[in-house]
Amino acid sequence: MGMPPGTSYPQAPQYAQQYVQQYVQPAATKPSAFWVLTVISFLCSFLVGGVAMFFSYQVGERWKAGNVAGARKASQLALWIGLAGIVIGIIFIAALNSAGDSSGY
Image 1: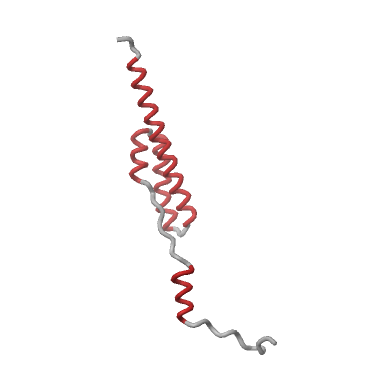
Image 2: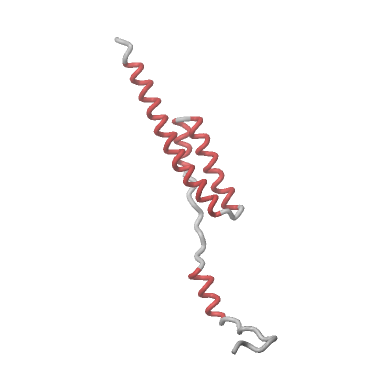
């Protein structure tokens, strides 16, 4: 019922191989490093913004190494840490302004 010994299945036609390469396995796109966001975050909060910039840098490094999942994770971390740095900086600036206004003059 099977194939005779010493024989193998025929190779798939060329058009089928091209279809699989072109449509079934789409190429991944490089995730954003959010550089503008992380630089603004660094200006608002040096410590948190510095951490966000580190993860922005890691996006490119991991992408070049072929680590797509790691690049995506670093991208998401850069985004959320960058946003946190901006929020912390705004809260800090607001606190400084309100402390300056309560001098009684």
